Length: 228
Image 1 (cartoon, helix red, strand yellow):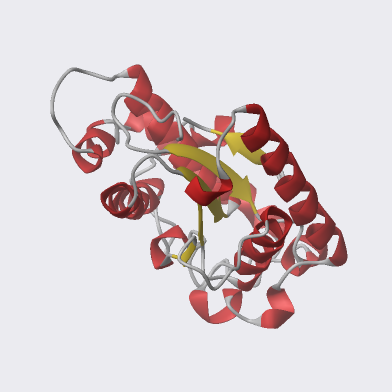
Image 2 (cartoon, one colour):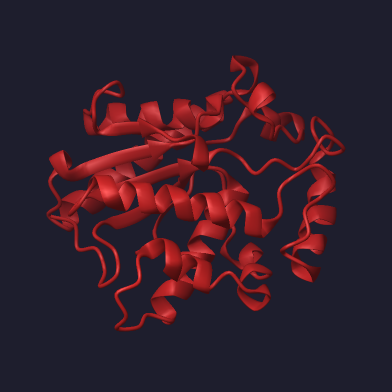
């Protein structure tokens, strides 16, 4: 059984997708319309990274004596994340079409807005500067850090309601995962004896001083991290 924590029914790993074709081309691909296209899936190096992440996860599960039957893989619907999740599932010997794997819309990439979509990766620095200044202010037509944190809170609440004693592997994207890592760490740090649900606890740490620091939890492509 997963170790979990005092305020969560499951334990959580996060995995950023392997290196993608947009990563190689230096493109921002953040809309559902573009992100689900096969042409914006994993690059060959990304497939290798996903397999290595799966092998690392398998090693960690064995070291913690965690049964594979308790693993649940929850992923973003983008092609680069579903491909990553499939590679990990294959390494673990879990059929991707089984009940152990779940595609969740709430885990999708942060939408950076039409002004940034399909533009250069260099534009990320502008967005992150805005995030640090005001994580509640979205790029024009896009999502703010707080917007993403809210839908991730919904995702975690749904996972917690559906599963208990499981090892959850969240396969998503750079910004959503660093935001998720930031808020879950803050919830752990501010843990209280109250009976509040995880949704309320995450909402409680969605403040400027916490959300503005999400870049400190950045992950590399294909990076697996045990969060809680």
